[in-house]
Image (cartoon, rainbow, N blue to C red; front, side, top):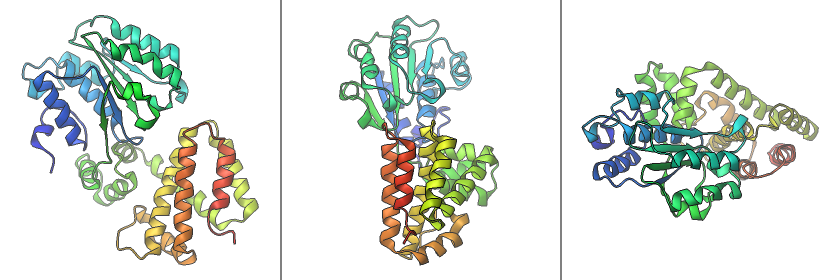
Length: 339
């Protein structure tokens, strides 16, 4: 059960009670830092937590434990991402932030607040930012203005410069418990069986679960990608190469989408491996249970494990400068079934 202390206020965050608890205690003691690094997998709730913390920092409620109140001018403005003392920096069209954009953030952060206690900057997907551009933050972290608070959001702390990590308080978010996600979806009107499936598919990613509840197309798309995986495994060498070509043509310029597809496939291979070992654990992709069972009967556990590991390595490779087409070619030829 989550700590009641962490549940006070209107944070609007599902899971991550320990992180909320830590941040609220720092507010109560007046010991908040000038730099924070929130890390965790995509769609885990990092940005939601960052915005909630920004609301708590600038909330106008007199009672500190009640912050963020969700009703004052600052809370409403931050909730709309329309507050003059909040700077949210994203890369353009999915590209990483450039050094000029980061320099502009540091310039704005140095200005005095218009109406709030703090000027707060949130920098998204910082692990994708080039090291030289990351370095532009260093002076702000070394010599922060009293009113400045910087929140860096990243999927991986390892890809953030050590000089930045050492000057920021790291908050490593973990997947939220599936029971909490399911309960939150049901509370929002989702039918229980559907909520159970979405929670399992989410892998603890709250953002993905909420998006899937609201948008049927997300689950339809996921089904399409699993059908593609099924066809890849059933196909021969030439068929697999053609599938790699088609996916590259459709998504090759959007590595984030390709990684998302592979993460979906990762859950599928985990389910297959568990079924190979006759695990009693309910599969994540519970709506594909018969298909997973059938595949597990046709391949060896070692082949399922190899497919799982190859998929994971390809996800890591696509976080660098790996060529999407070549990575998919190699992955599909690694998958079982060619013999």
